[in-house]
Length: 145
Ligand code: HEM
Image 1: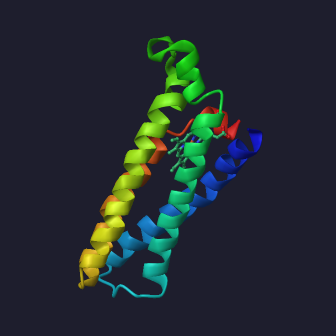
Image 2: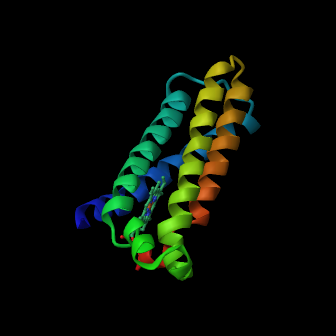
């Protein structure tokens, strides 16, 4: 379904931008020894997590409706996928699910801490790792083409 792909494609800009802002904000807060506020800091981290989860759900749907997702594996078999096809059908979905697990861990860990530096550190490390993983498996050529 073209609409699911279009949604996944555009939401990716928003989700990645807000995730990047959350990571940058956490690093700045950590390095600057700032107080973790319930306003900006909490909201930005939560907003990033929610957007990434929506993107994950749309991605899961896309995986079942797109010709480049599960259908590609069914048609060609795992061994029959070339590198670009494997990126879309295997690596991108798999790595992004792991990235979302890390981001979710970062979010729930941050809640356990009272100290601002530990909260910022949890967000910076886990969201940061998630962001790097996601960026490492984006089908750049196809997305920006
Ligand atoms: C959570 C972070 C994610 C981001 C930022 C992201 C981003 C993207 C982007 C930018 C594209 C290229 C879109 C285009 O060609 O215009 C794409 C394609 C795709 N994504 Fe994701 N994605 C994410 C998660 C997932 C997950 C979890 C799955 C599946 C379980 C998934 C399944 C797919 C599939 C199957 C395609 C290829 C669609 C096609 O060519 O028909 N994505 N994704």
